Image (cartoon, rainbow, N blue to C red; front, side, top):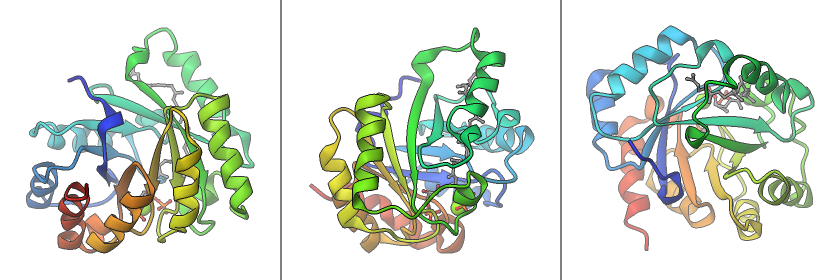
Length: 231
Ligand SMILES: CC(C)=CCC/C(C)=C/CC/C(C)=C/CC/C(C)=C/CC/C(C)=C/CC/C(C)=C/CC/C(C)=C/COP(=O)(O)OP(=O)(O)O
Ligand SMILES: O=P(O)(O)OC[C@@H](O)CO
Ligand SMILES: [Mg+2]
């Protein structure tokens, strides 16, 4: 399937390491969301990723793997998003794992399916920030510098402001989006219903709804219409 993430306004991020009933999965896939991201920062394996992909493939919704570890790279997704954590203090999460993966897969890749994400971790309490040892003590100028770095210097198609687990500073997100020339600004973190979805969609190009799918399903589902009904 040809998938153009540049048109996306809304996505759900589903974690292969968490339980989701068939009924809930069907409602998410038929919700009108622009795409399903599959990813998580811990407990993601080849087997649980294959299982989730097979379940999502019953539906027509675009499906993207956000790679978080090399052992869980599963063929068959429409696109592969590759996070580069710009504020990681452990360089493994900037280029190290990527270098290892490219030693293995470099000659096999269809690069038209690979999309680099310049991540800016903002919530020091999140597993992803802790795993990557991200320096989350960032002021507005730091965030702006990382956003420009991802967009202008590294030409990442996505700049991802990641507050995973908490709702972030939408002023900061909006200013970062205003600086981007080519990249798309993805925002994720703490979107637990339509009100926050609308607010985040006013600041970012694409919003990502994760934990609410598992913690407040009906509210999570309602974020799709909230975003798509905005002009
Ligand atoms: C043959 C074939 C199938 C080829 C395609 C494969 C392909 C495209 C290969 C490309 C090669 C390549 C460069 C791969 C990357 C390898 C790799 C492991 C990179 C490291 C990625 C990285 C920086 C991970 C760190 C963690 C992170 C940023 C995860 C992203 C997702 C995220 C933040 C989830 C939130 O997690 P959650 O579970 O909700 O937990 P918290 O909220 O508590 O954080
Ligand atoms: O789980 P939440 O807080 O919705 O965050 C979504 C996503 O950005 C996580 O990578
Ligand atoms: Mg999460």
